[in-house]
Image (cartoon, rainbow, N blue to C red; front, side):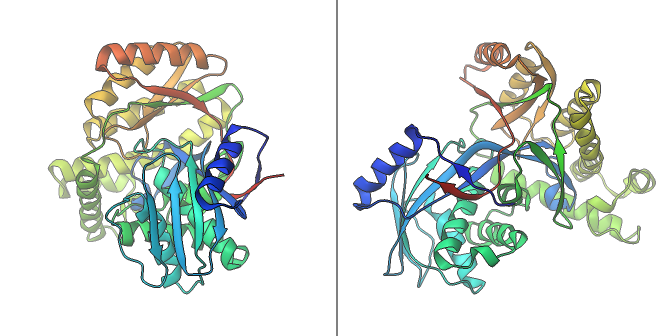
Length: 398
């Protein structure tokens, strides 16, 4: 749920403080944060009302703010160019500072839902890579919701599920990205030291400890993800088409989450071509999620290797979200020292992949992956181990 993180004396806090004072001539009155996330198993299962094994990571977005009395929001970033300014009284899309639309979207969604908002001067700093599949947009959305809620005096009474849903609505309706609940939910509910086994239909979760001998390593392909908007929509539409077809012959089928392997065996002939492939992947992937949770908890290396291999092969051959750079990264990860298993993460078409490696091998693993991937693709990967960090909350400054 929500948590607080104490800032040790260090450069990130001091750099943000200096930058904020230089821009606005005062100290921030409030510091909030929200984490990025990595999906450990469950590609594209969230919008099919299925299961996802997700991890809030120890890379996050900080937002420092000082309240304004004029109903305006002014927000800048230390990571991306531009400063966005808008009036709370009439929120419209911005065309100049595109990342600012995520803050605008949150203000629009909460204001539309009846929450009173106050303006602020704000400064963002994020350690979540943008465009990599680690949900930098959701981290910003949830951090903005934290700031608006704290300044408005209503955050303490806001159910965390509602916070996640309104941030999802902000991205779906205002931004126009028809994503599932996974990203925002993880940013709100993340737990230090544990993955979350998320049920996307019931918005419930179970904490899953990760065995101490397993290290989770992010491997960012640095490949551009220019096709994900159209391709994401096409895959979602195929899943919905398949669910409707099964719903006509199987009572109680509302989404692909409800299609059992036995029902698939009886009626797979209802579908053909890419629609059949997309649906088969989701049905199989949904069954892998609880098995992966058990394997990570128990330290079952053989199961982790088999489950991640099956997930990757399905993503490549059935859901077709694996590009050339991802294939090159997979080969590099599978050949690196300490590897237990590896798979895609996030929407696909580039971005990040995730490896499960033996604890203590992180440096050697990263060095070999970077070298092998550069030789195969010509790109410089970012490879770094992550831990499970807390969900969104205040950042205490002393």
